[in-house]
Every structure is written in structure tokens, then in C-alpha cells.
Length: 170
Image (cartoon, rainbow, N blue to C red; front, side, top):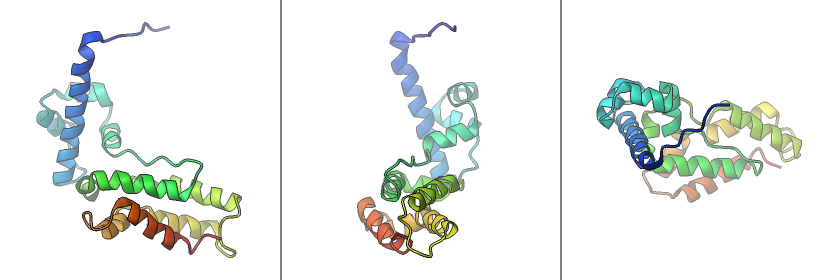
């Protein structure tokens, strides 16, 4: 069994370093897209590349840390859309430039399957159709179009998306 390592008085410094790395990564992605290097993040954060790798492991892990995929819980589509809208509203410039699919196809598939299992899809709506609609509605470009830099609140965008989703719901 490995020995537990306690940082003690160093913990606040370690937390500040991690926060600086995340802020640097967010800023670089917001300025220039998702082709940001670990070296550029390290320079902006004022740390070495090794520090970034030790904290986050890989570039993909770092990108996931700045834009985590929204969690999908058992309560379904509304919660999925609310979580997505809240995350996107917090850092819209970041998501405009982050070209990786953050919401994920797997989330939409799981939600569609749960809706089908609960007999909550409208008659004649296939699982594939529900999956496609959920994927479109839970994409950043649709949110960005409706949000318009704060013209609508994330809650108001969620309501619009739910009205659009009513086409697949029973």
C-alpha cells in the first residue's frame, strides 16, 4: 500500500499553481483555439512544462479540466441542458474556440435510451431521431446562437431548448 503524501503548508501553493495553469489554458484557448501547446500554457502560467504534465498528465486531460463534459444524471434531458448552458455561459469565448466536442455523443445516446425506456418519446420517434435531436440541442453552437452574449440567460436558453425538444417527447 503506497504511503499517503500530505502537502501540509504547501497545499495552498499547489492549488494556486493549478489554478494559474487552468486560467492560462482557458485564456490561450479563448484567444486562439484548441491547438494550444503545453509549452504555451506553461509560459503563460509561469511554470515549467513538467509542472503542467505532473498536474494534468496530458494535453487532453488539461483541455477536459478547463471544459469538462457536462454530467448527465438520472433526471434527464432538462438537467443535461441546464448543466450545459451554465457551463457554456461561464466561458463562451473558450467554447467558441474549443473545437473538441464537449457534450459528447454518448450523453445524448444515454438520455435518448432513458427516455425510450421510460416511454417518454412521442409515438413514432425512433431512438436515432431522439439521439440526433438531443445532440443538436445540446451543442454549443445552438446555445451560443440563442444566448447571444447574455441577451438570454442560461435558464431562458434552457427553456427554449426544452420547447424545441418537445417535438420528440411524448
